[in-house]
Image (cartoon, rainbow, N blue to C red):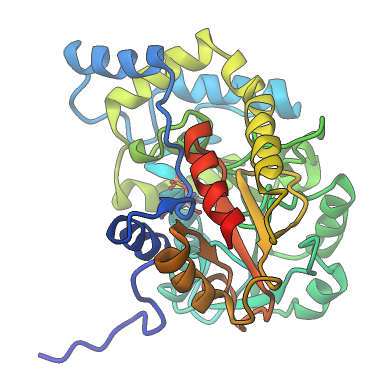
Length: 381
Ligand code: PMP
Ligand code: GLN
């Protein structure tokens, strides 16, 4: 029986494609964003202990109370925002689930969601499955900042949501306090909900503060803020994240979440609740941890013919390869994995119209040996 697809534009994600090619060609995998080091030992032990202790059945749908309390404490401590763990924090199966649930809960058929290109690849399919439309606004190259006038021009009576991502994947760009003011001005007196993807919230460099929308009282009232423990605790395979939003928005969010997954992996929630309480230094030290990796990787790439863009946040380095080959980023990434022995991620799959840049993304959430092996190959090009 022929099946008419609901997602004609969707194929296999570029992350899976590049990781598969990396395996086939024995390339150094600097593509898909995941660390090649382990989560903290105490955290891993806590997960296995929770399983031995019998935490193997459904957790509460909205998440363990002890974990929601830790998330609320962290939100107060870092962003000065008091949130009620009972009504404003929901634990999810990764940020991907939270993003999908937020979009499905809020956006109706025929409505529009403003996204900024390059946009993380899960956003648009989630929007399209609601019968809604993603309105793409390109970020301004090379700093990947938002042109707020373009946003003002793109808002229509159908705009239901604006989706921001800071620190931004793939560019590492971060929103400033004045960006948040611009955003607040645009959504003021409208029904627009802000969905803020802040999975790299603890990875900002050079002493900068992460400008969470939760710091901005006016925006916080109308936002759903999504984060991921996968990024913060080096365990992308556990798929635990969360959403913070007002009680009214959380109530809608939870209606979808309870039928999408109902609850998140119970043993990991027990472990995170204990680990957040006993080791707050882990996330406080994360900027320094990643800044060493960023600086090391940039140093290693200095002799190469790649031009390095600035990295204010996140764990990806964008490089301009135009001095090496004159071809588009998808073709270059294919060539690089086969002939250069390095897997990278092109930007085109994250853009409605090909950006026309000669940039690719390299992940530096890797051990020194991996960074050195990757850089050595990149320096030979
Ligand atoms: N948003 C962004 C910007 C990401 O980079 C990622 C994953 N790398 C996610 C969401 C998804 O996070 P998770 O793995 O927790 O689902
Ligand atoms: N978020 C990761 C990245 O940007 C990939 C996640 C995935 O493979 N779905 O590389």
